[in-house]
Length: 352
Image 1 (cartoon, rainbow, N blue to C red):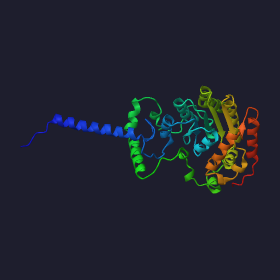
Image 2: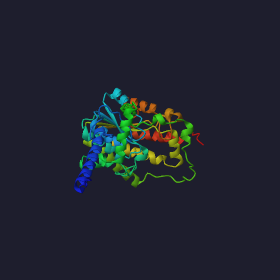
Image 3: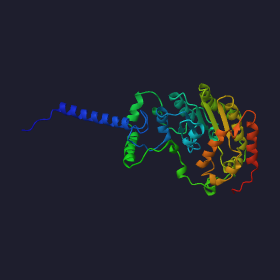
Image 4: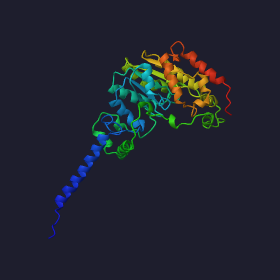
């Protein structure tokens, strides 16, 4: 005898199954937590490093550290083990490729909010990021729901198809016998880079259309001033017991050649002068510059393009900063940057 299915019971059963599935998916995401949003790495699982903009906040929330490496791709190849050996501080990275000052400061601020006892922040001072707006961002789809303290938007994490895909990747990564790499490997790009003169010069452009000098005018100065005030100095003032170490990267001579040919050399030097003058107003900020190390900058085998140097240069910079080499002071920064300008204005380039 056929029994008629009770529509009400059927509907309840379907809803119950859907609810169980939804809870199971959310529980799996919470347990694995591929970006460490709710907790640190789950014991027994291995995690591949993916986009820093997704993982930085989880690292800042749940790892132990006394020092932070921040900045753009020119800071990504620093090794935390080198900082730990030189300064004696447990260290994390909070780097992100192409990050503006606003983004960099955001990572540092959140880390300091989770761990106000941080003793040292090492951060890049990129020429390409000096004259940008105080809230400019590099990308439109930054996952800001990961960065706040609201529990209400965590549903966007628990039931995000990309996050669920990352859960699968963590499980597969673990099953394949991989282990979570050390923080030295976080964000690095040097294993995939090709270095040398040919690689660097391939990135040069036709400079014949650049005929007018680019002036560092009042508007540029105002923009830089606000950028530095909002995204550097405020944080330093709020954390007087934290030492902030900024470095001007040793861009290749081919970069400076581009500045000369596009008539932006004076602009860049004046921008750096203003930025450094503002930074040195705070006692807990130090600034270093290695642009005058021509033995490095003119050897294009140290670079993968005009801006990016090999990790061995990162290693050298940490040692120099720890030893105080290349430090800029109120008394020497103007003369030093004038010297940098003179070097690259008069260098005999052989790039054509």
